[in-house]
Length: 201
Image (tube, rainbow, N blue to C red; front, side):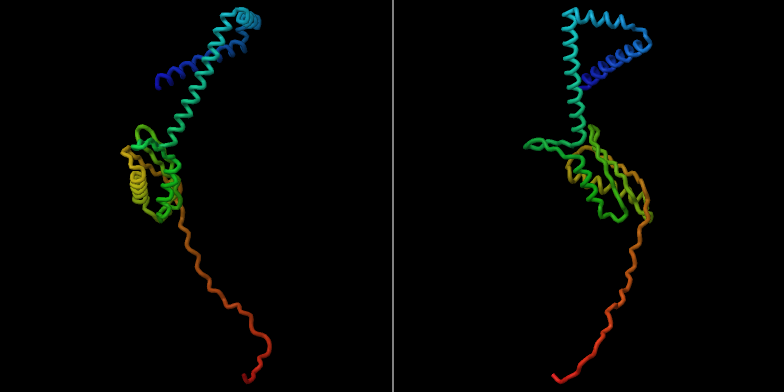
């Protein structure tokens, strides 16, 4: 696959380089209009040359489609984690893992907000956590706590042996808002107006 990627990159580099040189030559009038006209006339007149151009065009379209398919497949693979079960392959979306991490750390009192980003590669799983902490926490201790929780929960959930690299990026330190004091409600029952009748019942 690396050989195909290298050949494709080389091919597209040569093509775009040639097109760039031709455009520059035309803009500087190094290639005259007569030269272009004669070249196009020669191409249309020669059947063999037109056949070669047609084959080259088909090859270019085929290579372009292959590159698009390869790129889309690579992007799709990077968005999921796959492992084999006895009954077949199982894939897990990286966004599902991110939601799981959010829920796992939702009740952590030191953290106001957390946004995880999961990336999977052949080297393992990398999880970058962008967190907003409260100002009254000890940052080294809290970030180590976050790393331990995330690593333990993800390993238990996935059951994979690949290395898991946990990174924590503190983006903001927020002040913890104090709970508003309860205001004693006054008895606003309107006074009784009218006469009271007494009698024997």
